Length: 554
Image (cartoon, rainbow, N blue to C red):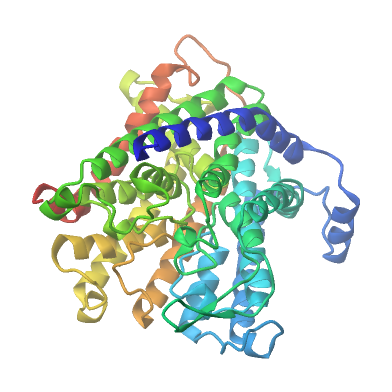
């Protein structure tokens, strides 16, 4: 079977999986976050932590809870890394260097999973399981909790309460992510992904040399890494490693896992709101952007530019022959349009315009479908901006989901949209201004700029994938990218929760003949247009100097 035919079958199978799971998973998550009863194990946990699960929080208290939990998580993971040499299952590894430990702690707590290290030669099994895997659950659940708080803001009226963060966090972990990850881990193990607690095995190669084959709890971490759109990888080669992604079935499964929850959350949104049409509209906008990006990326990689690529017959540099160009493009598109960062090919080896699409996907804010929770709340903020623009066109106060979009709401939306571009562009500018960060670039010229731009775009948007041509394991990049991750994650969350509190306090506004219907194709088209225009106006100069400049010269 040709790569093209295999790629088409993979896309069809992926659409079928997502279509079959969209309604039941979306409805299940809606029931989870609207339930009034608590499981026995949950009540025990609340009692131990002195939490009243029935007391709801205002948006500032909810935000403080998010920040406090995340700070504690950073400190815990930092300590675990620094003390790993005295912990069990350390495999004899030394403590992680301070700047790298900081970068890694910030990365996993922010759902970024950027890795400036090789997992199989840096971290022991206990740190992988008790540190990284735990944060894969927690950081994903935080994003889902914030998204649900925003939905509650639109669904409620004349209140300052948006939910209880601790209840949303626990339910996201125990009722949604944990059961799904167990099923996914079993499927991965059955398909050949490694799962053990063994020390590395030493084998003799055909040439007579010795090679160490590292094992570990790979399948369990791989399941929640993809399901929670965390990214990273147990092995340095990530999902191109045969122990982590051994065959086309596991490749399809991993792509499906990282899209499963984000594409089901619009259904949850519609159910919690009491209007499923609104969920379909958000889903349609996500699907249009996803399909357009996948088409562009596949075309750019299949029609490889450059004499060397044309002579080779395909742009296979940096790609696994097991998957080929179409499946590699599908994985790259899915991982950069979510906040995942897992890769089965090296994006630095993509064609200039193909690599440019992966950067653009992250610059959108990863909203098609985005990360677990972060994609939904990012798209809802853009929906607010869309109705505001529409209101300006007709000269009336805009409304969205029965709430007026006034100065306060627009300010929160504007601050949300400006935060990540500021982090990305300022960070890239600083890195390009000094000799030491520039020395980390493998390439000069436009491609070198693309490497740095990709790194800060990935960190600021909490994606975690890398162009691979940039040497990120330096003091500058460890510190700078760690700050980019924290600012890019938590400042937008504060603005989203502020928006949730603002709309929750309003009285509902009845729809009139002048109200813009936000469930029809016209609104979907306007929403997609606003996404493209906002990104184009913000990032076009940087893209023009990087991947576009390189692409037009090939």
